[in-house]
Image (tube, rainbow, N blue to C red; front, side, top):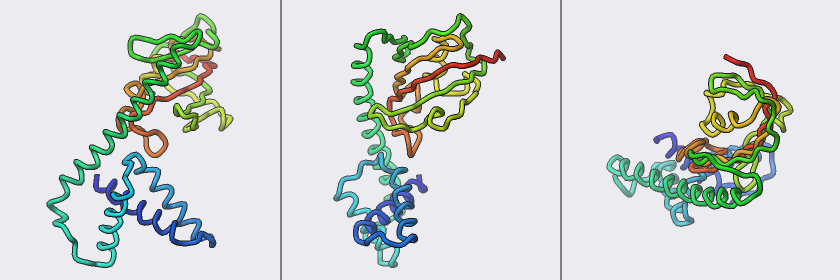
Length: 222
């Protein structure tokens, strides 16, 4: 939690400077990039402009050694509560958007869902040989958020990946068992079958529904 608070302060300070200064030198670009990197880590707090200003005020007072306007130690529990509430609110907003996306996806031809809430469309069934959770699978995959933003893709990297099927998110473990070797499936995975309320910062927000196109090339039994 302390790390998150520190990152939040650094992010806001760097972002403010970026608006006030012209980015021209290589050092400027490096510092600007550093600010952007930290911003991605705390972006799911969704701070309002007024909240940003107050946070910057505390940051500046601390940096110049000005007397704190509040008792910092006594405010620590409230800071933790504030961050948790912000993250929960952001996570719920992502869940709501994901739910609507799943509802729309289920209206497409050939789309089905499992009792767990996983939505899927089998593009190619593959052979009769299907993986078990203990097997290692070799796949190509392309993962996006519901807005189309790519967060990970072995296809883009041009390199297949192998892993034990029971060592990944539940949506993958369940979804890959629906096709056989040589098959292809599109998975729409709600957050409870993916990375939950915490997400996987900075690329996957808390509560995010994930979309994967997966091709299963090989099954290596345990």
